[in-house]
Image 1: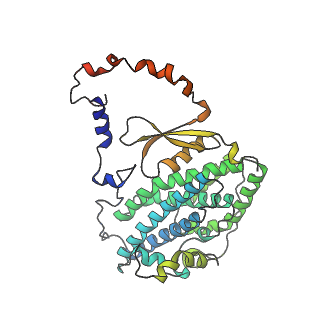
Image 2: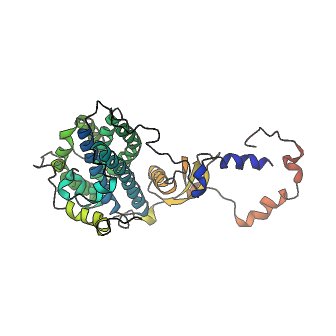
Image 3: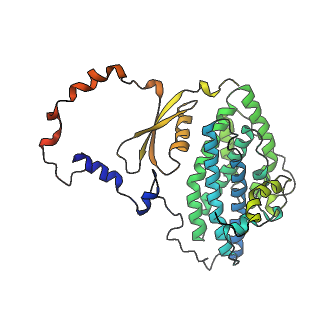
Length: 275
Length: 97
């Protein structure tokens, strides 16, 4: 009889609980948020901001997914895939918002699957091939630090939907940055081999930093974070020599088109397909 | 490359669910240190919204009873029904007993 109380406490929950073997109580981040674009928000600007942030996330998610079956450890593979799925979730919400704001009513699939490389506005850093684990960690550290700083500001955006998406993302990105920072320190402060690879990765990432810092003013914040991590890792701050061009204006490396071909192939072969 | 996975110690993972009252053993994993064990546990055992708290402990730090001790450890309590609180009325509105 006394046990009944315990089980009743464990069992009280949500209506859709029976669908799940274990975890329950999932929340819709946009629950109760008014989706009308406020009068004082420039809908065109809002749409292009959402597309930019979504493209970063989608391309980054695709690269992270490529680690599946290839990561150094099973646990890292799951960790990287989790991070990719977080970003994919952000991209879906942002594309949907972009379609509402720009008046075309395009859905997330239209943005993700039916635009070509020249229409994407992600930074080039996101589309570069994965390289070794050190490169992927340095890239993730930079992108997560930038995105977190930016999302923290967006939580106060006048568009309530974008603000809600940002609020959800901040918690995810805090973990992404922490994950990358812990690995950066572990590798930088590790063996001669891992330290050397981190140095090389920093040099490879450095030329692409400029694109991140042009549009939104979070540079100081991000550089402070990166400096903290590199110091803890016993690494120098890399010399900064920006490359010309920017993914933000649709100028991409040769690596984006093949990435998109893989991402979009099935959806384009079966345009009306559902799964 | 010195630290291959065989060198990483084994950890036991305990997760407390949202409505759970205590941490429950959910499995084990390999990790290089305590911090990595926690993040691995987060990524492997709480990705379907299961948990609000995680404990990890090095498996070698768990002292466990052995099968040989089963009888002397557990048999003596089998016939002592008077140790159960079944002789009391428990009020309906008292939870977690």
